[in-house]
Structure formats: structure tokens, C-alpha cells
Length: 259
Ligand code: PEP
Image (tube, rainbow, N blue to C red):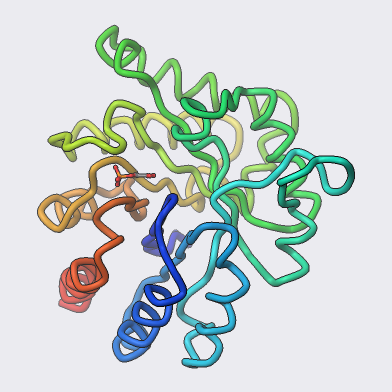
């Protein structure tokens, strides 16, 4: 099995140059001892600056950066947008697509997600593809059906091999930005179902793909989530915004995996 434990932090619309400096200087003292990878998604405006600070503290082998979003186009009259080509130009390795915030507040739909997925692939940037169901779908026991539909959206258009160098983030919309109590066994079942579905198409992809969980991850629930065999890491929003809290979280994970 080739899966590496991955902790992704999504800063959403938060952050400042001060926070970035503070975060990187603090984390640079410990990150080199970690046996897992960290990806940070600050607001797009700060990617280049954060990259610079990470290099300044010699942490570029330990912390990677992700965009929170990209446009569906690479050039042109799309005022206010950022392209995958620009991300590649400044050396960004990952981009989140299909995040619930984009679906809920910016009408991102399956066809937008397909375009973004394709453009990231064409630039060699790893998509962090968020999938997940609404509360109504969850209550109607439609979780797996909805996740598979969102995965099929990719497979039917690009084939199963498009999942090579792709990260799936299972983020139930009802659990994001809330104080939801998470049942790790339930999340494990969803991840397992996603992996089993991919296995029908390609064994290697199914075994090697990172399936992250995101939604109300906290210091209290992170270990129980990561103990599940098909949860390969987490995507943390609010709990990663407080640096000392996030570092505590990373240390808890590190201590557990060093034992
Ligand atoms: C997110 O924004 O992707 C997320 C998982 O948020 P939170 O951890 O705050 O629920």
C-alpha cells in the first residue's frame, strides 16, 4: 500500500501575512520530525508569499501548498479569477475543487467541477476533489449513492486513470462549518465503499488513492478518525486556524504514529 498520511488545512477566507509568518516559524521547529505530509490551503492571494516564507524556513520538503479554488479557464477575460497555469507558474502542487463552500455560495456544479478537474490535470496539479452529500441526502440514506455519482462524473468523462495523482476528500456538506459529532465508524464505512467502488475499475488506483475526511475535525476526534483503515488523512478547516491548536493536533497525530 502506497498511501501516505496527509493532513490538509483549509484556511478558507482567513489569514494574514502575520499569521503566515507566525505559523511557518512555529511549525518549522517540529515539522521535520513528522512522519506524515502537510498541505496548507491559504487564500489564493497569499500562496506566493507563503511559499516564500516556507522556503525561508527550509520547510519546503515538509509543507506543500494548495489553492482553495481555480477558474475553469487558463487565460482570457475572466476578471478576478486565478488559473491553474498561474498556480503551476508559482510552483503550487495542489488545488481543492468541489468544496461545499463553492457549491453552496458560488453555485459550483458537476460541470464546473469537471472543467476544473481537467484543467488541473492538464497543468500537472493534483486535484483535491471534494465529494459529499447534503443533510437531506444523508437523512435519506443516499450518502454512498451520491458519492459514487460524483466519482462517476470523473470516471465517465476522463476514465479511472484520472484518479492517479488525485486526492478524494469525503466532506459531507452537513458536517462542514458545524459542530457536528462525527462517528468515525460511519465515515470509515463511506470511505470503504468509495474504495471498493474504485476497485471495480482499477485495483492499483483503489489501493493507492488517498481518501481524506473533512468536516468538523477537531483535537478530540482526529485520532479516532485516523485509526480507521480507509481514512488516509483529514481536511481540517476551523480547527487549523488557531496555530497553537493546530500544532497540538499535529503533535497528537505524530505521537500516535511514532509509537
Ligand atoms: C472545510 O472547510 O473543508 C472543513 C472541513 O471545515 P471544518 O473543519 O471547519 O468543518
